[in-house]
Length: 223
Length: 223
Image (cartoon, rainbow over all chains, first blue to last red; front, side):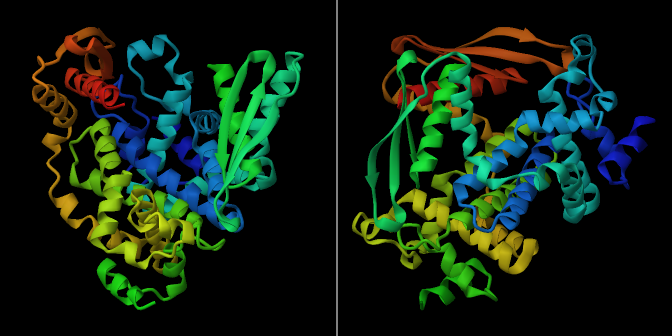
């Protein structure tokens, strides 16, 4: 139990009902009274808080970019990273099987527990408390976001990957432009000849469509 | 503009800044100042409010069932249905192209506008206001949920479909049971001989795994 006070200090919140925190740290392999329902609640609280923060931080960013940013911030790997910085693994309650297989290091278990903690804070202290905890956990991440870089990701990643394999750069080609002037839809093809790979992206700008095509190409390559 | 007061009465909320409601009703085909960012925000507010309501309404329901229930309540078809009951189509601002193709009836446009309205209410009146509006919009749906029926859906649907085609019922077979006693994972196969179709579901109970397998079978049949 002695890890709980330390963890509460780290997340910047002191529980009125510490049993909620205890439950948030309990994996289903340990007990029937576990963190799964809290994770369900916490996931939606977290998604909403991050969406709201991004909405306020970037008043000019279109919806697609906001969605991509949020997805990046709440994906399993990002959550697991925060969990690791909180040493959450030390506080988890796991069943024997999970202990043997080092479950305290598994990203999915760490991410779920973090979401459950956000859910537990919300139940214990209300929405304001949850907001403060999330703001603290994401302080560095949120202040370091450069919205101009958001869309570079997929294309840059693809380019770097192809260069590392000594392959030619992908070719992007606009296939169609549809719709009225202020509401156009671009369809772009990304072609990687060497891999005989072609993907198609759609978006409200050529840039967005290219990114989507690049993203799909990366996914095909990695699958 | 005269539809706005009626709409505000229907959603049970009167805007301090009616321009936010106006923006929530503006499709991107009509103007650069449209409802896309509000939709991003509203989607996450709505998801959270519904998650919280379900969490409170069904204290014994496991996470998987809560997730399925929420997905059902916030899916495009459900949102579009609520929009239709609000006569939202009459209040939408659409570009010429969308007007010609009867965009005011398209489920995706209707669903997006409803999410945007929830986002606009949240910005205008805060979280409590958004909660009240969502509670009103979902009043009938939320009170008519029978959690015992949640999981029946996919299996019942599949059975009804096969019966309507005079086919034999699907065979469900447990393939593996893994994990410790209180945290088992069941893998179940659903076999429809006549269609040479086999799908596999995974879940924390045999029942849940069967439902997933049935769901996948339905999706394959319908695709």
